[in-house]
Amino acid sequence: MTETYQGKCHCGAVQFTVELDSLDSFYCNCSYCKRRSATLIRVDEDKFTLTSGESNLGVYGSRDFSKHHFCKTCGINCFTKLTRETGNATVVNTGCIDEIEFDSLSPSLFDGANKL
Ligand SMILES: [Zn+2]
Image 1 (cartoon, rainbow, N blue to C red):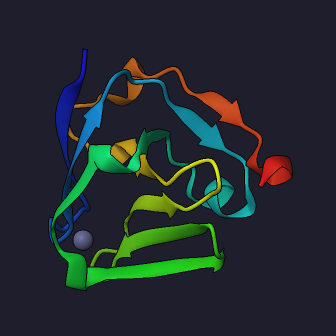
Image 2 (cartoon, protein in one colour):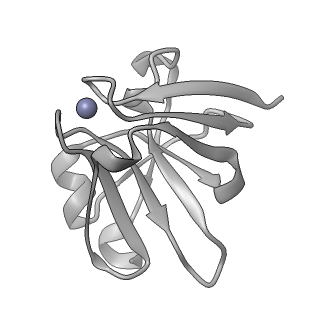
Image 3 (tube, rainbow, N blue to C red):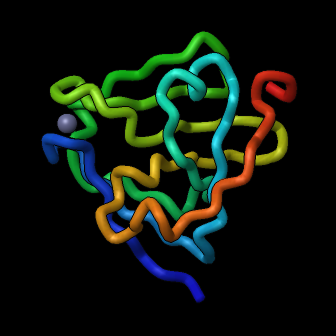
């Protein structure tokens, strides 16, 4: 069943909604994600809506297909936009969603260090 969740950065400037079919989450061991240690969920582009804070977003990423979006005020990375031949997607930082408890997730490992 699809549920809609509200997400936000730490200071609340950046807010979004995301529709999730499941809480199928993962860690990524690429050089960026390893450093932030976030638990992530990937959704198709149309399941994610930025509702506040577009002008407060900074964008980071050296690769064309992967752009990390963070709040310029509190520094929290809220989501990453992926543009790939397999389809556009958004990878959400589950820590930004208050309704999702850390211990309700069983993240798998995505081997981004070798696959990206
Ligand atoms: Zn913020």
